[in-house]
Length: 105
Image 1 (cartoon, helix red, strand yellow):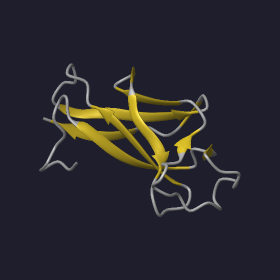
Image 2: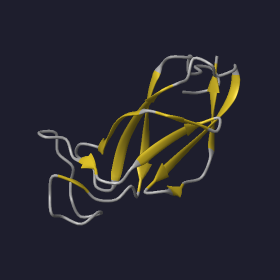
Image 3: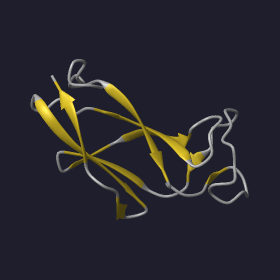
């Protein structure tokens, strides 16, 4: 998603995040485990995706396959999102991350 290729309302976006914590299955502590694909490593902590101050459903919250401490979180851009810059924030285990902006058409 860039200013010349903005997100569309209703589109599913995938974001990369770090530091979302332990996953299932697996006894390895965060930062040591290389995430796999069969099965995907699901984040144990509650994850909230907040767009323009409104919580959205996270469609996936998994360890990024082949990575360590990098996570794949997907969500749908709300149909009610106005064109311009939208605010996005991830909340992991009730701890809010920094806000970022992304363009929406």
